[in-house]
Image: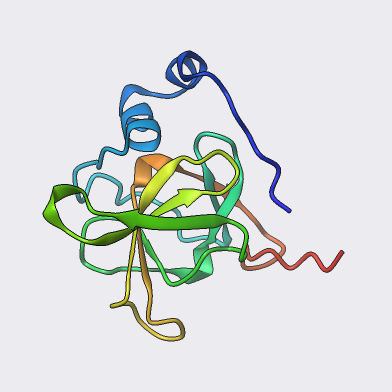
Length: 141
């Protein structure tokens, strides 16, 4: 089960950069192609707000959209989804299950094996290298 993280808005504002705060706490979107420097090494992308593991490097792909894209979350309890009808569109928003940070959206136009494209704001992610595997949560406990 995911450990929940809750903080007052003032604490989030003081801990995050202005852009990370606006994206993760106020549902903004960063400019496309503003995060093209992500590592290629095995590892895990974690939530910039709470450090929860969200996506494995091995599931990252170049979608050409300008935002980091993944075929699936690192584990079934990493992210949640909810309907987003803002901007006169119907989309599915993706958020961190641990702290409710807005991450981006998921679309049904991704590659195999899932056919999904988790289109994530780069400013919502940190990267943790993992030399022991592909970054996927494989703890069997």
